[in-house]
Image 1 (cartoon, rainbow, N blue to C red):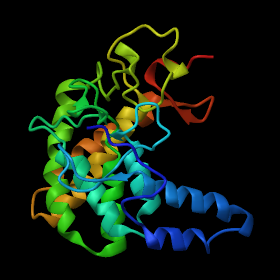
Image 2 (image 1 turned 180 degrees about the horizontal axis):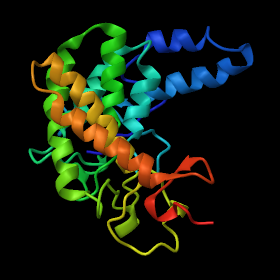
Image 3 (image 1 turned 135 degrees about the horizontal axis):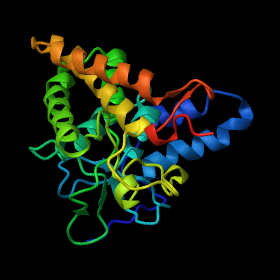
Length: 259
């Protein structure tokens, strides 16, 4: 059955609403209150594949209700300080969707009798930032036991499915224009020959995941050296091949040195 959020939310985020009433400039507060209450309106009751309340992308989204992509990570970061338990719940929801081969689906569409998602389009692995922020803020290290094996599997998936020619990683945007990267209608892919070429964002995101995995490995009494070595390799590659001296910025590999 389709779930449609109403103006009367099923779940409350009282600390987030209270924070919106006191932070920032007074003229910001109506907007902040709207955002906090939008988060509340976006939380729906458990239904497969979720065993917990889940926060959708937003009731105004064209495919509402839907969960995932990096939208949920940004929502988690927005709520983390004031509603850490809810933030953890959404991290768990996201990682529960991971397949044994490490694939983590992008958006999950929940507007029918059964949830639907793409079996080929993943999303940026920036959830590790949310985990690290949660642990730093709360001191609750139990989430690492879930996060570390998920990181191991996802790194392996990127190695198997998104390894660029030579070095680095790519998002399938360059092959399919279905916006796995989260940058819809990305102009950087216009007039570019298709192929598994190193994307600056995909390469950096996997490096970030390797950095978190190395830290979590120590926590789990595992050897961090494979993740540290891979982080060093990707860092060196980015500095040598993805940095443009003239612009002073990192770019996709095909844009480096292009006037």
